[in-house]
Image (cartoon, rainbow, N blue to C red; front, side, top):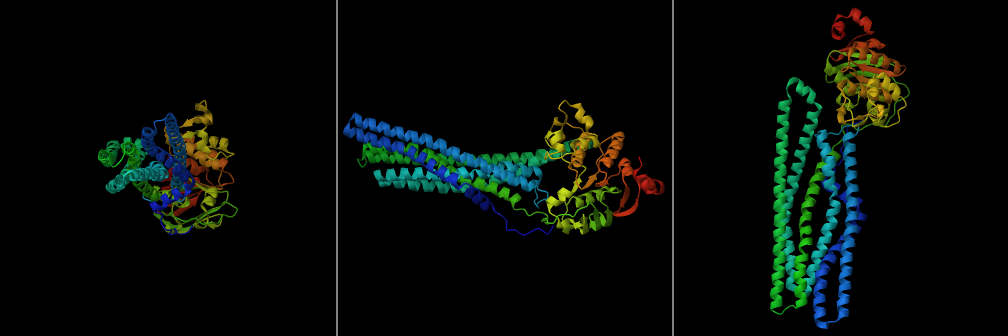
Length: 566
């Protein structure tokens, strides 16, 4: 792995342009059909005016029948163009939102973390609400263009009747858009802040759910709830602010549109009274003044949605443009499963050096929990190679030279707090559905009693974060998943802290048996696991201070005996 690259950030405008470019075809067809819809809507009062004028002149049944047929064509065009136009646009909108959700989720879930100051709950909000609101740009642009078509058609038709009516529509629309553009910018900034606060509240909820049990244990739940209430209240107040701005925007738009429609109606009435336009043109003008309200409403609302989409795109850019903590290499490890730690200095580790031969079972007794966590983080590649001194070699290759896929395929580090996902026992043990050692892993981890408890066996449903499992069951399920992966090198960090002593003894023997011939490192203080290891390394103050079998260390090292004996 190398140092992060310095890519040019992708701003929100680039995200929106990408969405528009990917959906050009759908947007073109959608714009054409929605333009037909708006033109048909606008043509209806124009046709009525022409029919009135024509019928009054000719007074024939043929002209009436032809007029009715023309109205039927207009109504059919309006109905079909709306139906198929919205169908195309909404399908493109939904598909585009899915693409951005997948992309944001991939950034949040990829093995190499990104340098972004966001919690998982915030990323979840970005991957859902912000992705949906960004994809709305697919509908906004065609609706904006089609509304403009209706306004232009109305202005031209009124201008042909009397130039003053056409100019009134054009000038009035420009004035309305100028006023609303100011409010739309306020909506964009307010929406962005609201999304950020909602995301922080979601992250706080996730943290509370994860730590609810220990919080109850030491009585910290009330303080935690007060902290959440504060964050939630901030999100609520910001939502109220956004609602007020949206209300002001909608009210202003409606009032201005009504004023313009009223002005067109009154002007047309005055011109008709003065004899400057005929009755048919008056009917057309009054009808257009009523029909133009809808396209004017859409036209005036679109800038608001553009600003909301831009604000959401800026939120997505926080994740998508964040550089990775490290840039993975491209090499693959050589054959063999040896693991070498060569003078590593990181956190509490100082000049740590040891080697685990291929096929060896080694236990590491860390006297300081922080040192154990630092070692696990380095081995899991959660720490960039340039953030620590020394080297970690897997099968002869330095960790920084290997691709993420190669590291994950060859070296698996199972944390003590492994996540449990909603699904079944089977999908948690074997997420990819490709493992051939699921039964052996279930038996070795002593998960058999959990499987036997339920009629569905391995297909028993597991709730999110394993909410319907005990702490020991969750830990054994996580261990079963690690064993089922059957990786060349397996590192376990405190895999039995939540199980009883008898179960721990059985797990230790089963793991040693199942992993025979495969490289295994267990960072633990468990006497049972220490006893089945080929050798034990004592990690004290960041260095290896002793090395022998568990029983020899018990007999000859008083500090070790005091630290691990139970």
